[in-house]
Length: 298
Image (cartoon, rainbow, N blue to C red; front, side, top):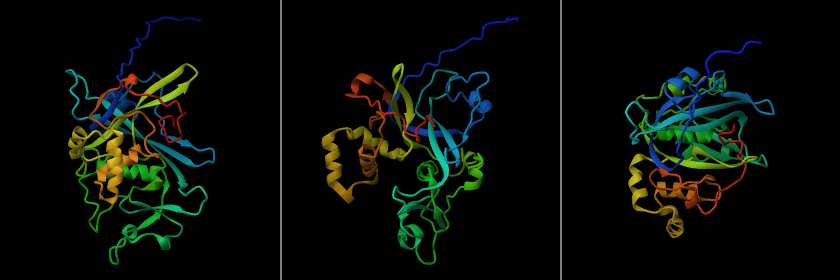
């Protein structure tokens, strides 16, 4: 056996964890290895490491992970460096979405809006459209609701209220790993920036508690709402009570705040303030719950 040559240089990937809201711009979607390394989208990849997005569930259903890379528009990097990048992950499965007791299914229409019903005949009018302007719809698949929530924020220049509006991806192509329809929208006519929420995910491992950078993938805000998060402390319990008391009178971003803070909201560590360095000591308790399947551990 002969072993020789130079020792491979291993560079440490230093990454200060962040929490809070930042203005995000999409720079890549499901990149191949060449694009990933060229754009410096994350930690350096190992020599033989490949980026795999397709997989299969235990039931034999096709699954696809969609990695959306965004940059912090307002980051001010050193000369020659990129603005800070984050990954937002989505997890799709070729499986119709229904509730636990299989009495209702989730439907999705031609502009990416979803609704639950026990029968297509009981879908609400705001979902199917008015007479003469009906929208096509079908049963939604697992993960589509979250993906289309992101798309409506990212493609914010697309007027979805118009009778001729469409926002519908080719599901069959998508589940073969073909994300060209998404890639084509990067820097496209409908592309816009949006507020994303940087979070810290906490996971228990044999080596102890580990913390990971993440971005919440279910709620986004228009950029102009940042002024509200600068002026109002939405992390304050008394402020949240005031929002709850508003009921239907609450602004749409206030309803999103309640969604984030609610029982089924974000389980990661976060603050509803402009982006800042993460300080573990500032959080009273760090969750050690194992990651769910719809996490970045997919």
